[in-house]
Length: 234
Image: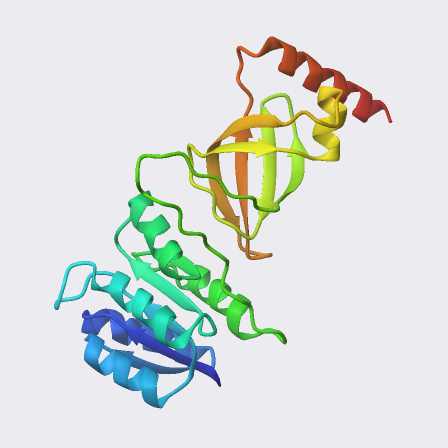
């Protein structure tokens, strides 16, 4: 991997010039491309430390998705891939990450945010591995998986968890932990909660999700409040 080499693809020449100026000012070598053919050719001959990919290219609307998928299938997960796009739809963000993107940055560009995120991947002793993703069937049948996250906080409204996996809003999770056992009073019980919000903690490159308690579940809310009171006194 060529340290501090960043390869980009965007069909907007003005945006390419802006990216080059910003990144070169901070010591990066930048190669900009405007089409998939040139981008893939450069990716074959050079070994960038990170790639910036626009989703919408002249050759095809949303072609960046196919590029991400092709890179992950041919080169594996070693090279970090960032999406830079005007597309704000949560489905686009989720799809890009599921295909193998490491991060998703919205346009118009905030250069400080971009530099901060790049430095998390490039200027570290141990290369950051792409966040894992799991493909779940899209057919209309039940499916499940087991993932490991940690509970970082609990209040009277819900639970915040953190881990390496992006969890979509609306996902039903079954949570089992020592803390949950203490709240519910049984080691065999689990909390069943829906994800109502999710975000990325950029300093640790980890994802967080908030799971809201059902306000109509008075038994659970009473147990949580009792645990909070007892925990605050300890």
